[in-house]
Image 1 (tube, rainbow, N blue to C red):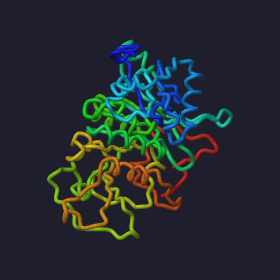
Image 2 (image 1 turned 90 degrees about the vertical axis):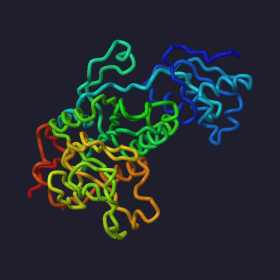
Image 3 (image 1 turned 180 degrees about the horizontal axis):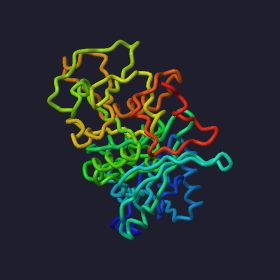
Image 4 (image 1 turned 135 degrees about the vertical axis):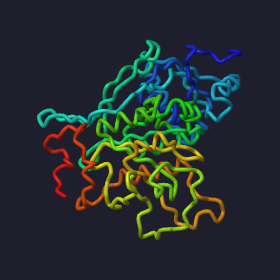
Length: 370
C-alpha cells in the first residue's frame, strides 16, 4: 500500500461512489486511468449488478483495475476527501468543459438525410493542454422535437457544490440540452458536485462561460431568448431583482399556474399557456444564492419567470426556495408541452435570425397565425 495517493497525472481527478463512476465509464468523455474496487464493495452495494457493470465497463475500456483490501481504505478515503466512496474510486482526467463565447444557429438535417437537431457554439481560444481535455466542438446535439426548441441552462453564482450537482441532476432528468456554467462565480465541478449529480454531469454537455453577460448578449443577438429566474414579486419591478424587495403577500390557488412569465421591457404578463421553448431556442438563467441574479445578466432577459408561493411568505422568514429546487421547477415548467391552440407570443419572440427552417416532418413554429 502506498503512503500517498498514486496520481497518474498531476491533473487527475478521483471520482467516487458507484453512480458517478458508472456514469464516467459509460459516457467515455474522459481519459480513464485506474479503477479502485474494494473487495467488500459488491457485498455492501445494494445493487450488486452495478458492481459487475462497472467491472465490465472498465474491462471494455481497457483500464487498470485494482482490487484492494482494508489496508487501502485510508488511501481511498483521501481520494474521496473523506466522503463516502462505497469502496469504488476512479482516477480520470477532468470533465470536458469547453470555453464558449456564444450559442449560435439551430440546425436540422434534410428530409433525405434526417439528423437530430443541433445548435452551433462559438468556442474561445484554448491552450494545448485545454484542447487535449475539452476538444474543439462546434455543435451540440439537441433533444428538440415536434414541440420544443433547444434549451440551455445558465448557472451563475451558485457556490455550494451540493446545490450545483443537484441542479445538474435535475437539468439532465428534465431534458435540458446543455449546462452553461459561469467559471468565475460558480463552484467548480468538484468530485463533491459530481457525486451530487448522481452521474448526470457525465452525460450532459457542460460549457464554461467566462463572461456570462457577454455570453447572453451575443446569444440573444443570434436569436436565443433569455428567461431569468427571479424570486417572488421581483419581476413586478420590471428591472433588476433586488434582495431589498419586499416579499409579496399574494398567493395563488392550486387551480392556477404556479409560474409567471413577465416581459422585462414593460412588465406585461405572458399567457400561462404560452410555451417559451416552442417558438425559439431558450436560455434559462438561474443562480444568485441569497441575493438574486446580477443586474448585468437580467439586462439581457426577454422575460422574468418566477414561482408563485402558496402561502403568505414572510410570516416565518421562508420567502424563497432552495436554488436547486427552484431550478428544477422552472426547468419542468419551461419544458412542459402546452396546448397547440395557445395564442402566439409577441412578434419580437419569433425571430428567425438564428433558426434554420425545419425540414419536412419537423415542427415549425412559424406555421401559426396571429
